[in-house]
Image (tube, rainbow, N blue to C red; front, side):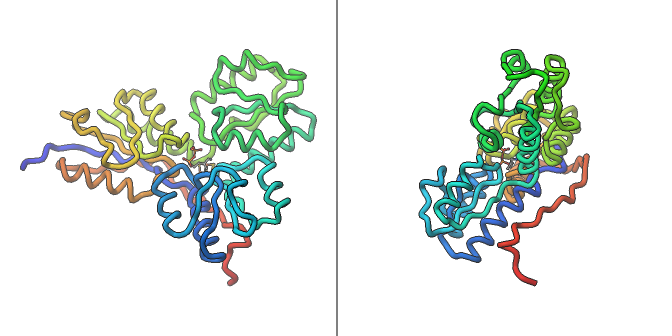
Amino acid sequence: MIKPPLTLYLAAPRGFCAGVDRAIKIVELAIAKWGAPVFVRHEIVHNKFVVDSLRDQGAVFVEELDECPDDRPVIFSAHGVPKSVPSAAQARNMTFVDATCPLVSKVHIEAERHSENGLQMVMIGHAGHPETVGTMGQLPDGEVLLVETVADVATITPRDPAKLAFITQTTLSVDDTADIVAALHARFPAIIGPHKEDICYATTNRQAAVKAIAGKIDALLVIGAPNSSNSKRLVEVGRAAGCDYSQLIQRADEIDWRALDGITSVGLSAGASAPERLINEVIDAFAARYDLTKEIVETAVENVEFKVPRVLRVPA
Ligand code: 10E
Ligand code: SF4
């Protein structure tokens, strides 16, 4: 069979970020240290394949702390938890390890600092997402006003418009967030916040890499889970940058080959929680059907690494 030619543009960076890498290591090291079962509150990262593989190693995934016994260790997911969660674990004398990404913890600390300075917070984020729930839960109810869109900015009613600060979820669209931040500054000139927003390096870099390929491709495939905020944003960025056929897939068997009929170039990226083996699986699936030329489009080099908590470090 003669295979049709196809160029596969591989966005770089893509896939695992330092916070995901650390969170997975935390679960593995906790199982090695304490044995199975180790409980994990919420999916450690939003990826079924990561979760399944840790479950095979002895992790038990639950949504709430109430579902964990007092006498087994529990890990909090990389997305962060409201303050009430570690407090409840402490009250029950549980062993717990917080796998919240340090870049999410940084936002928690920002919120607390502003609140101590008498400012009410505005959070730009997605309602109900565990990171937003965790970050808002650093402060008492009512202290954080959530905005999801530019239109929401007009609807919030702060206690004192002169005493406001904003924070953001780390995985938002860089461009959409810039618009929301501009609307906040326009309505509340005294609002203070980070230099731009709190979107992390990994989110920013993956979106920039997708933008760099979107103009050259007939289709974009992003590997990631339907509940992965940063992965979904990559699909939106691809569409906004001109690639109309931008799709989120969990793995190779979700590729709609009929929709790709007649195309000659495809872009491939992966969310921060998608393992590289799923990326390789997709590349192999293309290689089986096409005479493939691979081009890596690298827009940034990442060398961020986060240490695991001291309790899990092997003594030297
Ligand atoms: O849904 P998200 O993108 O927030 O999470 P994820 O598990 O897909 O990727 C890792 C990102 C985290 C932990 C949030 N900063
Ligand atoms: Fe941390 Fe960013 Fe990865 Fe979230 S996406 S875990 S904030 S590095």
